[in-house]
Image (cartoon, rainbow, N blue to C red; front, top):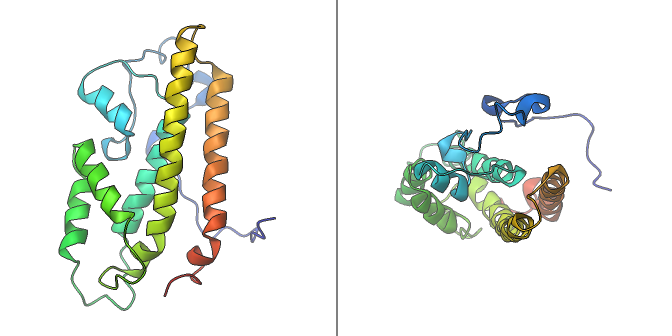
Length: 196
């Protein structure tokens, strides 16, 4: 078992996008041109569809990517920088902050590729960034793999009548399971035993 304390310390949710799921797939809402989300947290494919004004079927994978991008933001914009409070942000951190806010998905992805390569020995970066980089790297890789599987599933479904709720449920639960596996793998690091 995970040996998780039943007392919650914090809870993260994206309440800006709360929706009544019972009504979410009604005819009025099911128009593929009706894309929802905060641009900075949108998946690459959702952002591309939005920028091109193309129809796009949003899936739980878009929400999983949004959770990932929210975590990147929380890591980069973390207010407390223990033992570094008097030091200015490095030029790399400032650039990464700028790029993750960019309307360009390519700029954001370039910054994330650099962020996930940060190593423990790179003391110019705050502990939270050094701690989270391997977690974000594993998570990004898992989401990329899920993206490939989902793309193949959508292609298969296009010949058999489309994706359905079981496909969405499988994708959502698989994403949650992947996330739990990554958190479990990095449990010591996240508890402060793997870094500083």
